[in-house]
Amino acid sequence: MENKVALVTGVTGQDGAYLTAHLLGLGYKVYGLRRRCSDTSLARLNYLGVLDNSHLVFVDGDITDLGSLMRILEDTKPDEVYNLAAQSFVGVSWHQPLYTAQATGLGALNVFEAVRAKCPKARVYQASSSEMFGYNTEGMQNEQTLFNPRSPYAVAKVFAHHMAVNYRCSFNMHINCGILFNHESPLRGLEFVTRKITHGVAQIVNKKADRLILGNVEAKRDWGHARDYVQAMHTMLQYQGSPDDYVIATGHAISVYEFCRLAFECVGLDVKKWLVSDPALARPADVPYLCGNADKAWKTFAWRPTITVAQLIEEMVWADIGAQRKQ
Ligand code: NDP
Ligand code: GDR
Image 1 (cartoon, protein in one colour):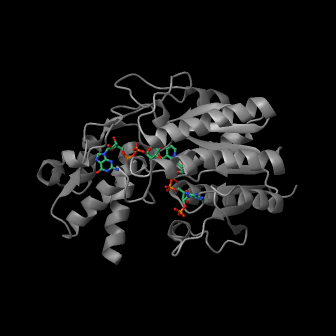
Image 2 (tube, helix red, strand yellow):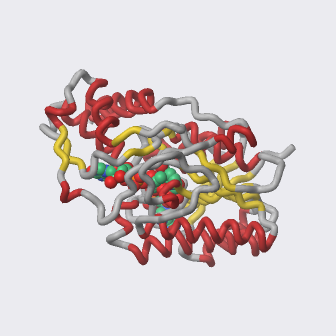
Image 3 (tube, helix red, strand yellow):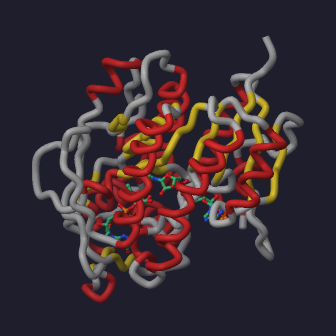
């Protein structure tokens, strides 16, 4: 049998890099959709050692440009399309709401349209988000929980999600939505709180900073490891039943403060001495609590996370300390 072909949008991002490494390891040919930038960073793919793999081919495109998607799908004819590209930072979505709607919302619709026109039999993965659940203070969220988005980013993801479900039903397309809760790694962008924390701890250890300033440290999130979560994306698409929506989460939530405490504890420091919470960094509206119930993913395709939040923190802290010492 010939190797499967996958198109990955968002290939340069955290999940794009881990997913590409995973798919190449399974023998896939991977087309990575890359947008033109003055300095496109391939650092994550390089970190995972896949940049020179001959089965990874970059294609130039942008999810806000339907024409480029049409051409790419015509040329590559993928068996699987993973739509990971997005303006993915919630914080910036209040500063750039229209761009966020275009990239995160309409961009996904462009992908579904292009697949419908050029390779309607392809299996599609849409990166939906726990942010769609929005305001919650307790309990666990699953596929039945109502959406209550609290940011332009979350609203754009709800639009993309509903479009995915609509295309699935209207055109019989094989589109799966993974409703993923926060997942992190040493390859997480520095703007996200977990990496800001582990990078900040490393700076303090390496005597390059004398405090860590965060916003709302009371917020609670269900944090998993990106390596586990990209496996869920792939496994979801292999399931032979009908396409569906699946929550992917660990089922365990802790606060930003607790994440910080554990990160400082890894290097024998007391969080109280180093952490400053500045209300000026708080968001116009925040999501106080998210914790996912991934039973459906377990029952349907036997996915479960393997990495605990404590192991994740340990890996991220030591990766940042090591990287800074090499600089
Ligand atoms: P990142 O921010 O690390 O990566 C985003 C990727 O999208 C980058 O490769 C970026 O390219 C690309 N991109 C942005 N805009 C465009 C565009 N207009 N055209 C083409 N590519 C574009 O995100 P993650 O890897 O963390 O997340 C992957 C997806 O999963 C996103 O859709 C995110 O919203 C969603 N998600 C993430 C979760 C998480 O906890 N990580 C949880 C739930 C959902 P460039 O390098 O050029 O900027
Ligand atoms: P989130 O991740 O908004 O959940 O979106 P982020 O790490 O940005 O925030 C998590 C929580 O931490 C609080 N916080 C801070 N956040 C940042 N970035 N910086 C700070 O200094 C800070 N201090 C406190 C936030 O207010 C928030 O409550 C991520 C993204 O990957 C999305 O694309 C994805 O859809 C969701 O996770 C699930």
